[in-house]
Length: 396
Image 1 (cartoon, rainbow, N blue to C red):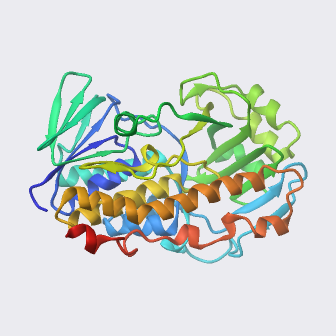
Image 2: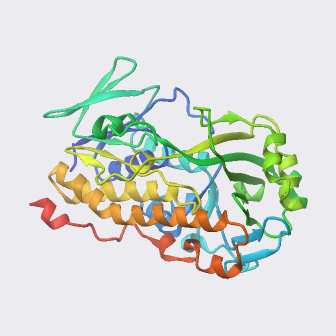
Image 3: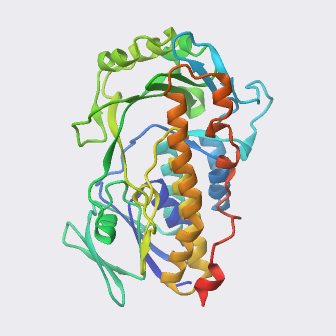
């Protein structure tokens, strides 16, 4: 495949994973990101063991271990009493770091910086900022047109431009993303402030009717990532980063136990934001000819399993494998989507089910034991070793 070139739209986790995987396979890569400056956006995310294995295959294993913390024990607590209802079996006191065998928490910006450094080490010109996709054409080559008047030709276009993907709209014309009836709040707190409210462990999800509150340590344990997700009838804002106040956050969680309300009272300033969760109906396919969707552009899901970033990483690994192994480009992209569709759909449905369980009144340890989060197979999917589906037929 050496000498072939790919245009990637979006410099998020999925787009940058695909870029690194393809650069390491000899492709010429250009990643176009609409932001003019890469800022430290987002907060904590989870990396599943399978996704971590995928990143390790790209040479990022040691750096990932240094930049993230293992989720040695994830507990679910009763919203009002703080009583632990369920937790993973591995105690937090296990000596040593379990490495990539367990899920890990990392700041999104830290992971993107690892990917960016690795990409630029292979090609310092691979990332182009301030480039918003307007449309594309497919003929002998793919021609991408950008809002600044620029254009770029490539053999393949991979759209990793999120739930409001321009490429998805052009390919499938499926309209705007739909509000999922959930509002999320997010902030980071220094551990020095949060320490009094961490009595039940390093990673705890407090669950109650229509609401969850998740907090866990990142950045060497010096910061606490705080996320609240609550059901809501409407979301009038377009922004993903609407400023929020501690008072409105607390109003939704006032009946939660003192560790939750204590953290929320410290959640002040510009670091506290809110956004609506948006989804789309599943697509039967993610590619047409030599243009393919990846990550949230292909399959936005609800966050109740913490697998959104992992799915994007898996996509990036699998699409690079398919493009390496199958000479005909449209067939390679068909192979990518065939390999990924069942996996992604199972996670999408499991995420909905997980949310239904943990946002229900009276949830018990028994119901949590039957919840999707208790199934290790959802988190252990290895994008490096999973067989490519229909690869032999697609190569013909």
